[in-house]
Amino acid sequence: MAESLSKDLKTGEEKKDLFLYDKEMRTHCGVICGIDEAGRGPLAGDVYAAAVILPDDIIIDGINDSKKLTEKKREALFDIIREKAVSYCIATASVEEIDSMNILNAAMLAMKRAYDGLDVKPDTALIDGNKTPGLDIPETAVVKGDATSASIAAASILAKVARDRYMKELAEKYPQYMFEKHKGYGTKLHYEMLDKYGASDIHRKTFLVKYFKAKNAGK
Image (cartoon, helix red, strand yellow):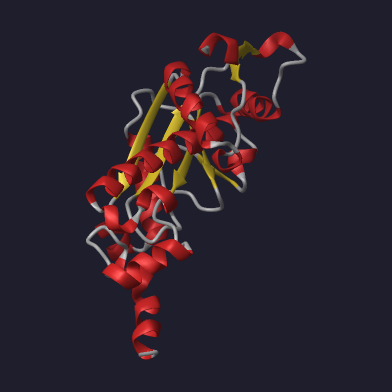
């Protein structure tokens, strides 16, 4: 299956824009890694990040922004990316770190940890978004990077799948919140469960201050 989804970059018609972007970056920057995060918006759970170095001689069919893929497709690509990657690392920043340093800084910390966990040192890093985590190599912020660079898109898939699996594990520990359905995001169902059960120890308290303040003011 993996081989059928991986094709040589020299086949012309099979080339993908995301992989061509990375190929062009390599000619100027050497070995590149893509870094992306998942879980900045949810009301609960850790924020995840992944760093990925892809080989320069393949494309992996279907790689795109993780939000544009079905869960089944992300799950399939998760295994293929890990198999084909030159190096990858998935890292997190905890709920406690999110509440103490804010979500932006926590996401940057998770990205830095993912980079630090690579067993191959890249020459430059492509970071999704308009901020960079402050690495010890050159960094390039790429707005909408997960729809631009194959390496960033691969990182987005690893981070998203890993975090979704983590939220499903939390759903078993905290079944009353139904995390398996909303993955911690602020859906109507999630707020209904918060109204009924209050916040748990894996909820981001700083994300809920205004909500509970408004709720209590309305009583």
